[in-house]
Amino acid sequence: MAAFRDIEEVSQGLLSLLGANRAESQQRRLLGRHEQLVERLLEAQDSGEQRLREILAAEEDVARSLLDAKERAHRGGAELQQLDAELRRAAAEDAGLQASLLQLSQELQELKETEAELKRQEREVDEDVTVTIPAAVYVAQLYRRSSKIEWDYECEPGAIKGIHHGPSVAQPIHLDGTQLSKKFISDYLWSLVDTSW
Image (cartoon, rainbow, N blue to C red; front, side):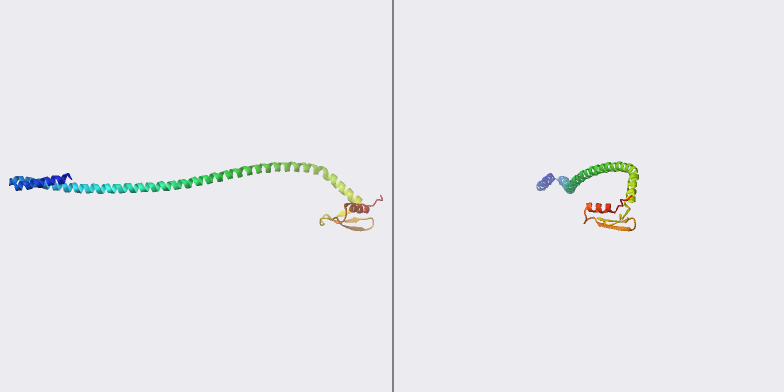
């Protein structure tokens, strides 16, 4: 703006000089100054336009950077929410796994205790069997010799089968334990035993 005023002043000075018939040298000097001012004005205008373009480009870059930063912040916030949700899910799963692990360790401890108890009982049974088997075998052999009954242990449940080897002939035994009373079965079997010694 100041350059336009300078040009206007120079132009008015030129006109006043021409109108007043001043010396030719002053006219040349003023014309030279006028040309310098026009050149400076054009340079200033070019420089101003260049600076304006640079400022607009810088503003555009800043605006683009700001939009990018906002977009990144938005994406980061969404990712943070997603990670927070995943962390909560993982914490819940971890708590469930910890509870399952505790329950499994308790069950394992109970199984170990049960196994130890079974081994102890097995040892006791083994000790009892080694003592009682000979006695049980002796009683079974004594019963077989005195009753002379050979039992069928593979018959169906509820049935009583075997063979009584009597004094003269072998007689099959076939009783239905579901139809007959225990007293009757016992009396019948004792009736087969030979009482003559």
